[in-house]
Image (cartoon, rainbow, N blue to C red):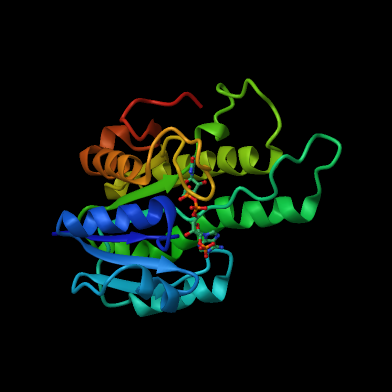
Length: 227
Ligand SMILES: NC(=O)c1ccc[n+]([C@@H]2O[C@H](COP(=O)([O-])OP(=O)(O)OC[C@H]3O[C@@H](n4cnc5c(N)ncnc54)[C@H](OP(=O)(O)O)[C@@H]3O)[C@@H](O)[C@H]2O)c1
């Protein structure tokens, strides 16, 4: 049995990963901004613990680490993310909303990872996943636009790469993952796959990952995504 910590766990892909990790027999630390509401989403479970975490708030990140200072975490899944304002064309991009997207998608995951390092070092698996997006792939960018979200995920991939290099000697496996185009509030109703399919794929890719694969960018089906 392993202990998995998932951010942005109250809905969408994060919630589906919580459910599937519980079904797989894992201990799950599910984090979200308002855990008092999340407890109404899922029935109580002896292997499920909700902890408050806003990934843009350094006080909240420090409080999470303090609450977990006596346990080991085997797998950290940085899933929380935001698209920011949609359909902003070139000519109308503004700095403030862009900074907010960066705080959530790029800076937050690294600060959470830093804060969780002691708990991850106490764990036995030493795996860190960053839920990125194919939209952050420069090779894949054939349609332009989406400046805020695209750049935040491209930068997240670079963050992931540095973490993978910095932690390689300690045996950590660090991955960037694309969850597919998924039917969530972010992905919308026309998306290609449901949250269960995405979550199952992501958890399998993480479970099967080896140190040789650390620092790479994978689709939820296990295929490699170009940078
Ligand atoms: N859906 C897709 O097609 C798709 C495609 C590529 C990548 N992704 C990525 O997959 C991940 C999950 O997305 P999703 O589709 O499940 O989106 P979603 O349904 O919109 O859920 C986003 C989750 O992130 C949380 N979140 C946002 N800002 C946060 C913050 N500051 N602190 C803590 N939690 C925060 C949300 O919590 P609240 O309820 O509190 O807002 C929610 O739990 C994201 O990183 C996203 O970029 C999704």
